[in-house]
Length: 242
Image 1 (cartoon, rainbow, N blue to C red):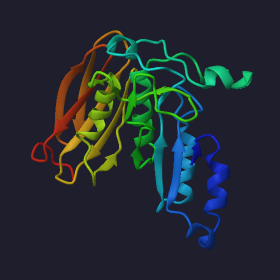
Image 2: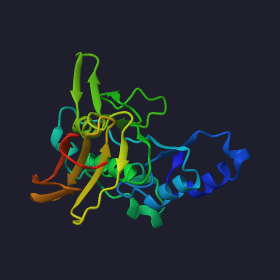
Image 3: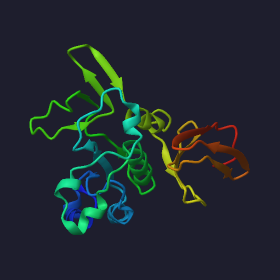
């Protein structure tokens, strides 16, 4: 497993021919090369190099940070810094600006799903208030933070961002193409095995946006609030898609 920008170098060797390919089930990727860039070209290349192999995002976290305890506002504010803020060379500093933690999660998951990634896994689902335990002491944030001494649990906003995808896009689902005509929103969609369609929309702007949704003969209009993520579920009996 490795960061995404260098994927071509890895998959060219891994999947050079049938003999080398047989030793690999797929490729695992991380997100640490940028706080906002998904590197879609690299993901597309890796998929098309070996379309029958898995491509899985296996590690991501709000890094270089100690968790903020029961402070929802922090997770929606542009205050987080990642490891690259400290160690990135000057010509790569632009990839590591301060960022909004919930947006980083949502943008990356949407970008991954729209570029052939089969699954998305957080580095740690649960950590303590220090951001550990961690033998290397590079503390970071998790969707769920616990205080063992007081037997308390804090479900951070990151947890609910993940739920928009994991709760409604079910095992066995297939990602389907979404054409977004307004670059002020990001979206991904999936078709579950029961025929239901799931659309996840992200609005990072400070204003409400009206959405006109069209799927074959099905049409709907709704709006997404400022600074929000929204999931729309369309039952299998409401569309004529196949």
